[in-house]
Image (cartoon, rainbow, N blue to C red; front, side, top):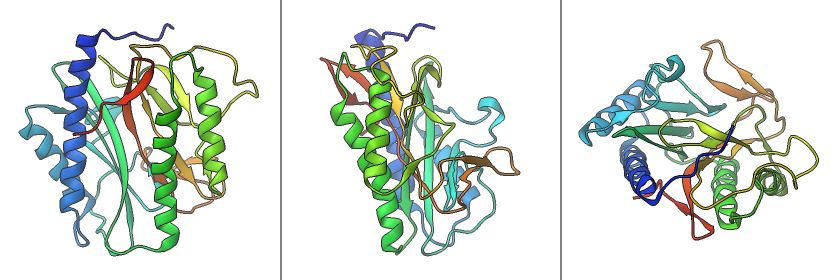
Amino acid sequence: MAIPIKKPSDIEKLRVSNSYVARALHHLQSYIRPGMTLREVNEMGEDFIASLDAKPAFKGLYGFPAGVCTSLNEVIIHGVPDDTVLKEGDILGLDIGVEKDGWFGDAAITIPIGEISKEDEDLIACAKDTLYYAIDIIHAGMRFKELSFEIEKYIKSKGYVPLHGFCGHGIGRKPHEEPEIPNYLEIPKPKQGPKIKNGMVFCIEPMICQKLSKAKVLDDKWSVVSEDGLRGSHYEHTVAIINNKAEILSQV
């Protein structure tokens, strides 16, 4: 399937929906405290998105029950909000999608709950630093497989491994479009496959495991953990290729 190329006017509409995602993440990060439940976090996120006259894109998507993915500690992605109470020392992944006027935005962060350990600070930093490293090196003409290869190398250089089986993706009129962008090289030949072009819009989202890359889905059919059972982290931005470089759309 061909990778969509967006017109400048399309990118401006995507910039709006993605700015709403960034504002929602900032809002949650400002207010989340120990003692809140994951359900309360989700309600706060959904209410904020509604205040922008937009829709929480994840709610009902493929049957997901909430507007915010709340991935706590060992859960790396797709955590389902419930009555679990946040406590000091937890780490929480927040992944939000927004639909505005038929265009989608998507981004994620992992945040500390109160004071956290140095080990967890480093774990979060790996996801964030990998994301910005990837954005910095993206350029028109680079192959997507080369990008995956560079992301994997960077994660491993920090002493971690990427989660397998899940990936970044294109975005636009649908929340998930072509291409799929793994955080690892699936075949040992990065100089193959589609090239990045001006007008492409996609999500880069490093998902970090400590020891084992193999994913396990929990009994709720959504929450994804590593088979090592250890804490993970996740960061994501939506970027557009403009003037041969990646520009972040999911920021205020």
